[in-house]
Image 1 (spheres, one colour):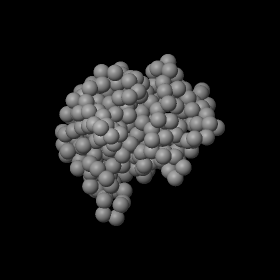
Image 2 (spheres, one colour; image 1 turned 120 degrees about the horizontal axis):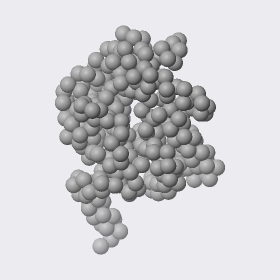
Image 3 (cartoon, rainbow, N blue to C red; image 1 turned 45 degrees about the horizontal axis):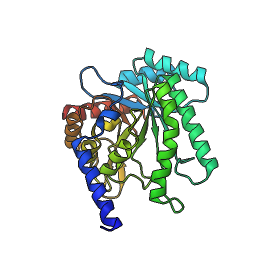
Image 4 (cartoon, rainbow, N blue to C red; image 1 turned 60 degrees about the vertical axis):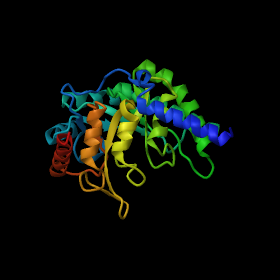
Length: 296
């Protein structure tokens, strides 16, 4: 049996295990950030709220428009982060996750100084999440480019993320890797396998239902990655012309996505990652999410 055949055999075995749900016990984690009703929760990103408002007013408006949570970003000032988290909870829209990213200093980079910067940034993001009361930090796990091959990105990013997991466990903050346009983790089977190989409850998946529409189907990703998913980003996308759109205006098959989310028992936050706007725009956006939720 040649190396290619053996590799294909191993991949097919892994795909079968993923489809059967093998390995899910170790990635279940604590059931935090779940709704009591079993219905997914509506959230928006902090940057979508009107910039002219004071922070307290932003949270109050988000709640008024119908949102139940906020996704923020890391903050360098610990005291300010704690204060912002308190304001969000007082308004009834807790900061549930932080979007760290990772493009600037990828954990797949071959240069030690870049990786060191990325690790330090992610450690700071985890601590800021704890300060703000967030349960999850979004991480772009790797970037494949002219200088970093796919296999290198895979092994190097896993090795470096493992260095972060003890701190994540200590702080009880989940690291959630997202499917983005980074030329990496291009299939839901591979995404699930990547998560399973950590065998750690503090490493989960953050699925963006718009990011795979050029080359896949959101409902397939949701079903395949399944209970490894800890958070969902909501966007919509039109294949013709490759255009981002408002929710319900693109090619995401929302009835199928909602059905898939119900099948895996997803009841946590679904966060819009769209352009910001005024009260009327945000209220309409929350109602669009209501329509999606009602499809289940």
